[in-house]
Every structure is written in structure tokens, then in C-alpha cells.
Image (cartoon, rainbow, N blue to C red):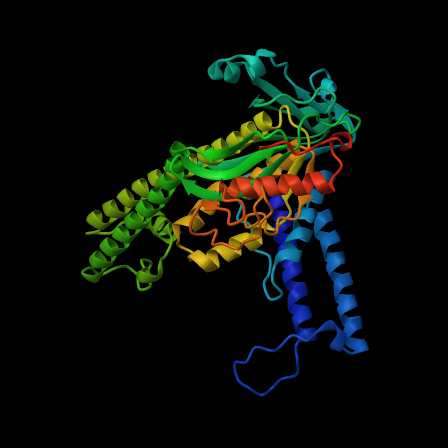
Length: 487
């Protein structure tokens, strides 16, 4: 894991050198204006000599990537993971920015790939690369959650090396929270160690490929309108309707919303504790003579806790006369801040995992007896930017967008069902019962009365019906015999 962190930092150095050299080549001639940042020219405006310089620079960058890759000493699938992360990251960063270095904290990932695949049944047997302990079938069917949790506990052994052809195993306890498909093929297995609340936690990630020969899911087609809307009963994250007229909504309960709100409360408490420590330390330093190592001249600029904790660590090894009160205050700050931080991190982990599991269960129950899925074809990032521009960054509705996380819900539908992307323009405005295209303000109210047929409807249900009608009209599903039968 530490080698992967070293490889990333080495790749960041290679990228930093490459971008600095590229900026020197692409920089426009000096304008003579002091402190003016040189403009960057387009590639098409460069001379042939400058283009050759850029090509040579790109070749040098690739050689540097190969060099640090070989120096890392990682197994091929682990360095390949980091190289792929590096390639994705360099496409996303802005032209003048660079990759950030990663501080080694003990967290990381180890990956093993199976080039020719590993059948799930072999993983539960005597394979020499990955071994999973047997799991009682009651782990997936018992009515009691506690019993299911207990029965799903087993062990995993991943081969991480060999000693004279004798396998070296990494063995860990694991909870299989859902069954693996019996006909599936495992393509990769990763062991992840992460820090949650100041403690290490291990996770097992399995990439399983299912057979493409399995018959498609049968049943009525269903359309889902994704979004976020606060209602009396909770936060609505989706509304669905199928071609038989059944419809409903997916809600995040008030209990889950309270947990997300509690996260904001804990962050505020951490800020208050930090501000109190800063004020207390500044008041004490103003009336005492400090040694040279205790430089508090920039105390007002210490925004995060790391500087305070570093000062406390240095102070504990350099005590001096008259420092008892200030030292104890700083030690009390450390205890309280770390307590609140651990509370927040654990609650966030539990809440996010609960939301992900809730989405999986909702999607699984919704699609259990239904066929193709119609989703609106739009970029959620554009919707988020429009919402921020309209509501403000600190608005409550913007926070609800983060809580709803519609991208996660859409990914759950795409992984579970046969999804089709449908043009979603005017699905909220156009009446799905009579087709009236009378424009109205959909931001002010959820319910609307159609000017054409006089029907009152929920705008999210109306959008789901329009998606369903368009999907059935443009996509042949269920053998081409599907018809919209909803009232």
C-alpha cells in the first residue's frame, strides 16, 4: 500500500515537470507588463520547431512514467491501477494546475486480477489465488437481520506472493453482505484499508462478471424520474411509473435526514472548539514570554486543527515554567476535537452506507417483477450547477441535493436493470394525459392543474409518465407488444 502511495507521488512529480516545461513552450512573448501572467497559445499557432519540442516533451513524460513504474516494485495489477488513476486525473485537472501529492496515512489498497477469470464456485473451493469461506444460505433468507448478519460472517484469503512456490496468504474476516452470482466470474479482488474515526477498517471489493447469455428481465417497463424534493414525509429522490399504471415514490426517511443534519452540527461544533482554542491560546500568549520554538505570531491564520496538534506535540517535549494552564487547555482541545471528529467520521460512514444500502434495496424491490427501465438522458452535473446558481451555495435545497445523491441512485438502476436513456426535455411541463404543452412555473409548487384537460397532477409523476410514453414509443421492449395502460 505504501508503494502505491509512493508511485502516485512520483507520477505527480513527473506531471509537474511536464506541465512546467510545456508552459514555457506555450507561453506567449513577453508583453513588458510587470507581474503579468504569460498567456498560453493554442497548439495550432505554434511553429514546427515548437511542436517538435512538445512532441519530445510528451515522449520524455512517457519515459518518466515507465521509469517510476519500474522503480515502484509493485505487482503489475497494482501499478496498472495507479497508472489508470493518473491518466484519468490528468485529463480532469485544469491547464495550470498539477496533481496533488498523497500523504501516507496507512490507508491504501492491494489488488489482485485474474486475467482468465475465476469462477465463483472455485473461489469457495480450493483455488490457489482466492479463497472464500462457506456461507450459510440463511444469510440471505433469514427474516432476522441480526441472524443474517451473523451467518454472513466468514473469512477471505488472498494470495499476495509465494515462498518457493508455496502461497503466501493474506487472511481477513469478512462479512458478505450480499450473495455472489453462482454463474459469475471474478475478474479482480481488492483489499482496502481505510481510516474511519481514527481507526483502520478493512474492506473486500470483488468485481464479478455475469454471463451475457442470461435472459433479459421480463415484466412491465418502468420509467423513473430522478431528482430531489423535500416533502412532509421525507426527501423524495425519485418517482416511478410502469406501463400497467402502478406508480410510487422513493423517499429518504426523516431519520436518515436527521443523521445528515447531525453531520453539519458536528462540523459546527468542531469549528467552535477550534475558535475557542485559538482565542484562548492568543490571550495567554499576549501576556507571557514564549521560547523561540513557540512561534504564535501567525496564530490567527491557523485555519485547521493540524497546526494546533503539531504545536501540542512539540510543546509536550519542551515544557517550560508557567505553561501549565495553556498546555492543559490545548490538551483539552485535542481530546474534544478528536472526539467530535471521530463521531462525525463514524456517523458519516454509517449514514452514507445506510443510504447506499437503502437505494440498493429500493431498486431491487422495484425491479423484481419489472422489465426494461427508462431513465432521463441528462447530465446531473449541469442540473447541480443550475441549482446552485438559482438557489445559492448555502441554500437548504442545495444541501438536499448532496443528501439525495441522485447519481448514486441512477448508478444502482443502471447496474440492476436494462436501462434506456430517454430525452427528458419538457417532461415536467407537457401534460402526459392530454399532451397539452402549456408552460407553467414548476419551481413554486409540486401540484399543477392542466390547462387542457383540467386534471391535477404531481409534476414528478407527470415527468415519469412522459418518460415512459416516450420510451415505449421509441424503444422496442417486451417483444414489441408493450402498451401504456396506466390511467
